[in-house]
Image 1 (spheres, rainbow, N blue to C red):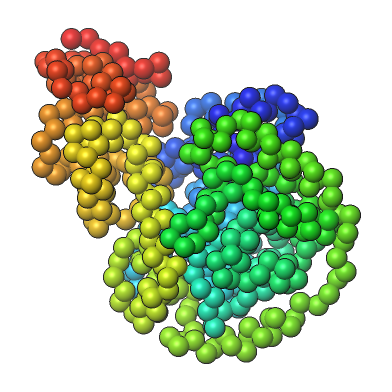
Image 2: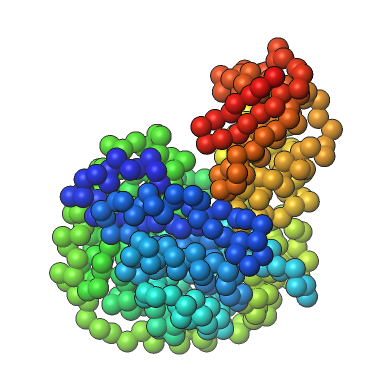
Length: 474
């Protein structure tokens, strides 16, 4: 998976032969209702220079829900596919857009959530997949996702659901082995049973990763080394896949500093060992109707009634962003132990985005007010603002919220202005000039050294923000 710190590995094509690119991580959101998503300046140019095959893998507009993804994301997605010459494209079999019951106000959870696993849910997802695939110049695949909720008596097995979706949509499968292994470890369908239900000939790609334990669950965190048990599972699965074209290691940038380039090299060597085993033991074709028939028999018997896919999405989406349950389905979902974990993960994700997008502001708050106060501010913010799709937009909303609160931090407004100016520059905006009341060089220097900016000169400072840094004139 591409992020800039991995670039030294890409000089050795004998080690890395394919790079998976998540295009939305390279986009910025701009104030244009017709074309709101654009690539940051130079992002595609840097990637084009690498000699490896590039695969385009979406992470922001999943295709497992009842709402078709924003059509405005298709042009930049097509651009990435065409300029990087991706042989296929993929997205998650999940959803992240919901609306309140009876409302047209659509909002994002900014977090991938599991779709409604019924026949109606499968047809809904297949429709969304076909609508996206028809607009792309290459074949399309969907990624199997993680699900921390308990299996329900009114849903299809995990494998049956995926099989029904991809057969109906006539698309490929990106098999995230770590996700489905995590699902089994957390009490969902065993991997062996799931694979028996999948059309293995549709699997074009595999993802492998590491995770960690949190609140009694194994988390699909992409946090480091692939567990030995998962590698053994992959050794069994890979030989059965006649059309496998790529095996990829996933690591989030947040964990790179601890893991390092040597850690990544070790994992990629495991990929090569697995690659040599592909297609050597094809599985005999067999009918997959048994589990589908069993699921159909229990589908209408849920205690809360058969939830429509959109009702499911509304209920799950409202709960993970902190709303109180209002319907029988929401009350039932709220009692699921996995719901507490989902709420915690969404909160961690939102706070992480704000910390990354507002680094100077975050450090100032932590140094002057402490971690507990910072957490209180985040919690208060989440009660009045739902998530945004892009971290920059959420950071701007939090900055406005923060400045509306009574704060006794003299330099707060100036530090927030510096962070917001950097965000605007990263969007591709023109270098900006600010007028601040505190010496910006002294502010930044103190914060980068982890010190409260106490004895900072005041006055009128004209500040230029450019890609080279901060320049000032008194």
